[in-house]
Structure formats: structure tokens, C-alpha cells
Length: 389
Image (cartoon, rainbow, N blue to C red; front, side, top):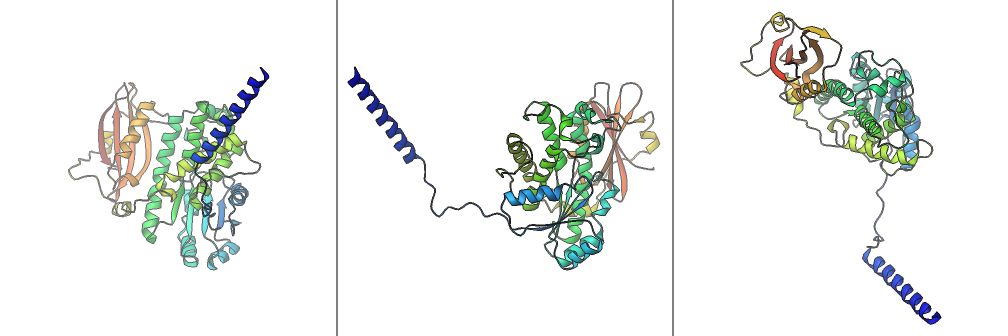
């Protein structure tokens, strides 16, 4: 009995050794010449804006340390501050990274100031500018968000549709600036899109440890909480260094299971967005922006009063079906018109019908594309006319 147990044990051991030897033989050994990719060269980065970006230098320093980047330096402020102007004149700024709420409004002038841009390019021919397109204050829902918990009631489709509208405005600005200076130097960081994807994951129960959309924010405005701030840092790193943050071991910050998801989400969003500088950017759009071509010949432009008769403005978003349809309409506009989309307004007629006015700057004028929907939210027609006529 004992002898049979010993024999069985020896056979078992031989079997294990054979498996182990076979496994090691099948697995390719790393080549002695193979080396891990070298970390990117350090950049001299000027961070600016306000509290929506104030946390970035600290997070950026931690990421650069984890990525073993040498020569990475950080400054905070915006031109024309004297010390910043001196850095520009000495060519000691490679990147200006800017973020604050209202990034698609008139506040944008703070980062597209021609004097600052020309000073940056004059001092450093490789100078780049990055605009952080973060989440929108109150989700852009017209005052429906009054306290932090109200973000839990936001519909992801509505949030994304409003973000799409605002992003289109800034993409047109980016095209104009890049054309003016003859190269892509003005970049956009799609943080708002990444954040919306994260919120969708939370709603679907796919982000560990978090069950509420509002948990990623700090307050009702909303400023970034730790989760949103870390996602913002990864998105900016991915865009500025054109390198994936996936796999970086960051001390402190969010739990590892969350960090892995945030890093992957940041890279997937940034790497597929041409304006961020990783995916190919279509420079053919420059001529379209400059031309501001008018709608196709033969388009009849009725009087504004006639076209808008019976329609009353509203701040309420229409049904999701309508939101999806008018965004699809914008995406299908001719390339010459699409960058000119400046705003979207909503209307009702009191009978259950909706209309959406898409405002488009083209041909030296502002055109209104009035999309009309029936009571079942099916589009029944489009009327185009020049605003003010």
C-alpha cells in the first residue's frame, strides 16, 4: 500500500515537472536586448485658469514622477503677468495648459489672446496650447442643478448632447487658430467627454465603490472631487505627453481598482480625439473654416417672422429622440458649415410639437436651421433662413 502511494507521488511529481518544463519551453523568453520604452522627454508646462485647474500641477507632478519623466517643470499663472512674460521671452515654456468653467464662452479669450500666443511661438517655435474642455456647470441644464445631489438626476444623453454642442464651438476656434499660424499648436483635451463616460459607467454599476454620479464632484458648481481630478490629470497627461497613462503606479489618490479604469478611460478618450493631438488631425478643415461657405445654391431663405410664427422659446430640453436627431443633423452638415455651428435653441407651439433652431455662421451671415418635429418627436421638415431678416 505504502509502495503504491510512493509510486503515485513520484509519477505526480514527474507530471508536474514535465508540465512546468513544457510551459517554460512554450513561453518566449524576453530578448536580452528588449528594453522598456523610454519615458517621454520632460516638458516645461505653464498651468493657468482658476480652481477648475488649480489642482493640476500637483497631480501632474505625481504622474511625471510615476512615469520617470526627467526635466518636467511646472509653473502656475497666465500671461501677461510679468514673470510669465519673461519665461515666454526666454523660450522657457513648452506648453500652456488652461482650464476653467465656461471654456466655450467669452472667457475663452483669456487663452486665445493673440499677444500671448505670438509671444509663446516667438520664444519657442514648438510652443503648444491645451484647452481643458471639462464638464459643464450645472450640466448646462438651465438651473435644474441646485445642490450637488441633483447631478444624480441628470440623464447621460442630455449631458452629452449639451457637451457636443459646446465642443463644436471650440473646435471651430481651434481650426481657425491652427490655420492662422500654419500648424496644429492649439489642442483640446476632451475631459468633459471622459467624465460623461465615467458617469455612464456609474449609472450602469460598472465603476467600483461609487453608486452616484455626484460622488465624483466636490460641490454643486461642480468643482472636481478626487475622482474627477484624477481623471482630469490622466486626460491632460495623455494629451500633453501623447502617452498612455495606463499602468502608472500613482501613490495616494484613488484606490487601485478605480485608478486602472480611470487611466484606461482617459487614454481611450484622448487617443481617439483628433483635436487632442494623438489621433490624426484633418487640416483640410482649415480651408472650410476660412471660407465660411454659405449653404448650397438654390436654398430659399424665407423671412424670419414667417418661419418662426407660432413657435415660443423654451429652456426645457425636448425628448431624447429629438436631441439625438438634431445632433445627428449637425454632424451631417457640410464640412464648410459644421464648424460654424454656434448655438442651439428650443421651441414649442403649445400643441405638443417641438422645434430646434440650429444657428450656423456661414457665408458672412448667421443662418438659422429650424428643425420641426411632430407630436411623436419625428422630424417633419427643415427651414433655413438668415437671422434678422
